[in-house]
Image (cartoon, rainbow, N blue to C red; front, side):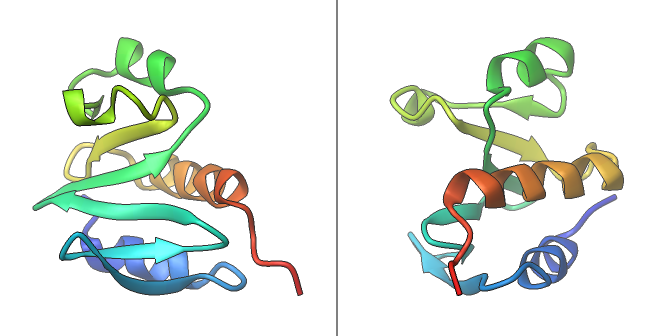
Amino acid sequence: MATEDDVRRSCLAMSGVTERPSWGQPAWFARTLMARIWDDGVLTVKSDERDALAATAPDIYFWTPHHERSPQLVLIRLDKVPDDELLELLQDSYRIAGPVKH
């Protein structure tokens, strides 16, 4: 079961990622937002596969009406997502958010 600390460690291990609050929750930024705690045990990331993720595992992946206007945002239930899948999603979100250029 993944935790907020697992997300933090994975995000901050990526080049140039910083952490700062967003809407009162911990969030991680590359050039733009790449991940944010949405609610206790729920993480928001960017994905080009939102519809497919939610269709194949709706108990893990979902979104709210708030996310309708942002089709790349998907919510993840951290207590249900496999660790390797979470890391892959964070890496994809990092790519979409625009890694910091050095």
